[in-house]
Amino acid sequence: MQTPADNLRALLARGDLITMPCCFDALSAKLIEQEGFGLTFMSGFATSAARIGEPDLGLMSYGEVLDQARNITDAVSIPVIGDGDTGYGNAMNVRRTVAGFAKAGCAAVMIEDQLAPKRCGHTKGKEVVGRDEAFDRIKAAVDAREAGADILILARTDARHQHGLAEAIDRAAKFAELGADILFVEAPKSVDEMRTLCAALPGAKMANIVEGGETPDLTPEELKEIGYQIAAYPLSLMAAAMKAMVETLQLMKAGKPRGDMLMDWPELRQRIGFDAYYEESERYASSKRG
Image 1: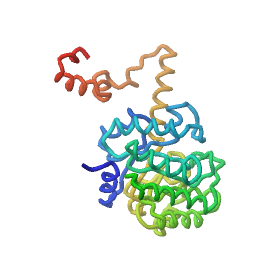
Image 2: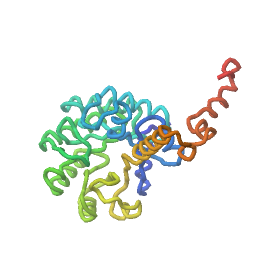
Image 3: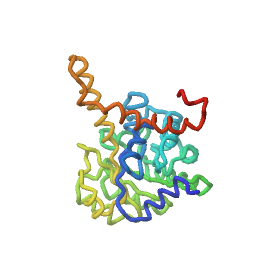
Image 4: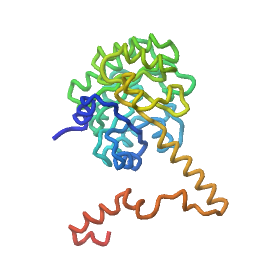
């Protein structure tokens, strides 16, 4: 039986660009799978907003993040990448974080080199730790994988913001040397920078497309041509959902019809899983009443 990590390895082995909408809870992950996407990422930004109603500034605890990851992986069959932030402490904490995400059913976990508390990669105030600490985090993550955690390591650097592109490339190259499976240089500011880093770095690379953010919002075809293998969209679903909810609330407050804003009742039930539940429950006489 293939594991989530096996399924992600198989996706990467195809060599195609993987379009990856990011989720923030079990329902958003289900919708991603229902629409035929083969991979999702539990966005730290969106999850912090959805779970605790706070910005992605290191306010969620490891336990809260891991609980959300379990809910998501339980709801879908496609591989899920978890956001492990800075690893929640020193190198030994990183090892525990990686092992925990593996036990939660994640196919990969992202570990980054920001100074704790971390910040969204497209907001102000980002700082990164020194090289030695950054490399220790990735080494510890890889050691956890080698010790038996069946999970891929997505290694992220935010050094572009503070130290420039060359330093970010150097860090990512070392991450690959240490054994990271996927590389992520956050927030390149131009197509030329995207080309430069993809040409310089080995293996699978991820682009992070934040609508209105610092990285150019290129088409999947353009990202593939540049050299990326994963295109993450961390806020698309959250932003769309928030816009729809605010507009619906405004209509409700004004006493106006809301029908055009709403998914119809049969589709709502079907997507959440009522139809599947009723069909399955027919096998058990005592459950037929729901």
